[in-house]
Length: 472
Ligand code: UD1
Ligand code: CA
Image (cartoon, rainbow, N blue to C red; front, side):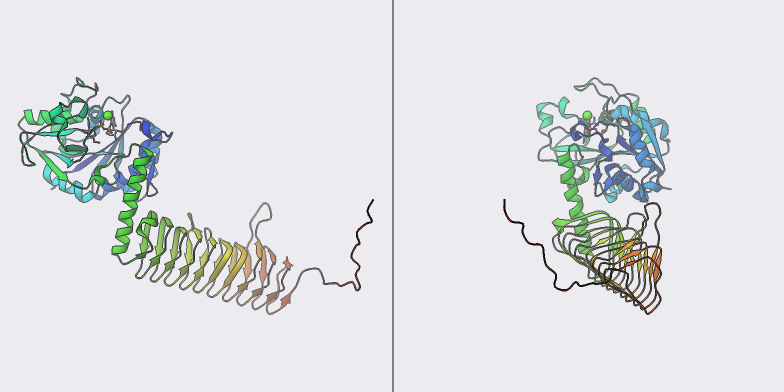
């Protein structure tokens, strides 16, 4: 049996440099809280539990954890409070009562979102359930970080201690190998070492990193697992760093999509804030944003500057530029071979069948359009059921809201709605019928009929226009 993993996530710090009311770990990267990325990673390791150490904004952080979806949401989460914050060692002391002795404690930071599970798996392999394993990295500019002090030169020399920048001698400051803030440590050993911490150092903090020298003093093995990808251990301390990591994250997503065969207009101009699934031969032009769960079927093309959230776009559909689709909770479905946009807006509950055409400045909400229905210009369809091959004219709307309640409009198959019509719901337009342009329809219309409801045209002969009045 492998040693159980208990993940501890440090999230008590204030994040002063964010200059924000929101606790730092709740700032978003790729549309999700920084902390959610860390929890996802913990879930991928099949951790037994995650203990989140909260301090600043604890209530908000704890509530946010409760709302997390996906893998992070399935993880068993406990909370420890650290008030006041007296250092990373002190933070760990608050988590200890929740950590059983038979496990390995994996220490992560809530503000380090891009660590990959494979990196942590390798670190845990070095720990082997019995050794202190540190994740380290060589940095050109190690200023501010804890330095990994070894018995001699080279990465094979024994690790002796981690010395914080503020406590380091000139010689130690010249060391480029830094401690990333991530370690794996057998919990029963951690417990003993944490009880020996003091705050006799430059910052008067209880340093978690001091356990390295205790391990060495006890004759226990300390191993350093060195990586080269700095983004994986980069923390977010300021809006600038958040934006930098966002770009790293987005480029990773774009690369993964391209490796699956998706063709991107420009990988630097794509933002995926959620999960985007693509079939074969999908093309996405520049400046598109995908949010929540979006799927694009085989051969789908998305034009420039589209924002698409919570939607399923079937094979062969084309989303022309500047289209905004947001399914929110209800979702949006676009059928095979449909043509949407440019400048179209699809709202929650829009369910479009195959080969539907939705043109510029057309808004569709909570409506079903059957195969081949078309609304090509300047129109509104809300709470409507639209049959096959219906043609819905420019400027027409469903008046679905009476000021208190919403009502349905049913437009049966093969109906032709002229331009500038108002269909006052609840109302049904019978199959194959035609509604004359400019009509305000308040009663059901029979199948096959031409229905017109507007002022009769009238012409007064020899009409004299008013003349200008004389001056003065
Ligand atoms: C720490 C390490 C340092 C390492 C660096 C990597 C210590 C003493 N030093 O530095 O060796 O190079 O991380 O980034 O551990 N936190 C709490 N409670 C506290 C203090 C911190 O929860 O009392 C949390 C912070 O919110 C943050 C994490 O711990 O998520 C690390 O704290 P931070 O102050 O960023 O790291 P340093 O102590 O500077
Ligand atoms: Ca600190």
